[in-house]
Image 1 (cartoon, rainbow, N blue to C red):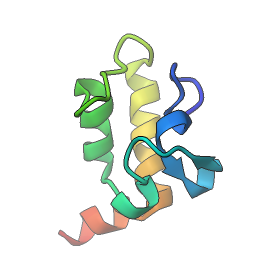
Image 2: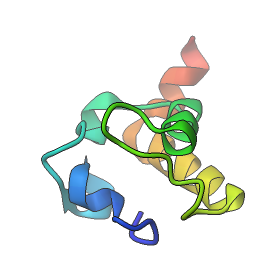
Image 3: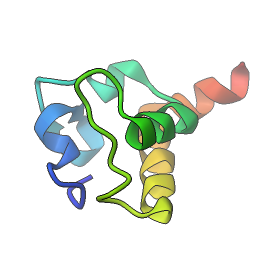
Image 4: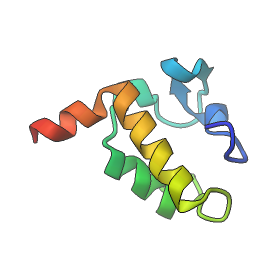
Length: 80
């Protein structure tokens, strides 16, 4: 999350990362799936711009897996 510039931690709260951003959604509450994270980071959403010029495809995949796993979003996606 810190490799992205600006860092995801500036806007988002994620307990596992020790971040407490107050601009974007609290990822622990949102519990996004890997696909939701991938789409947000790739396409942007709301005021968040895409990060495709800052992160490689592999970094985006790793970030999507990480966020969805530590928030429980990966489990939620399995039950759908």
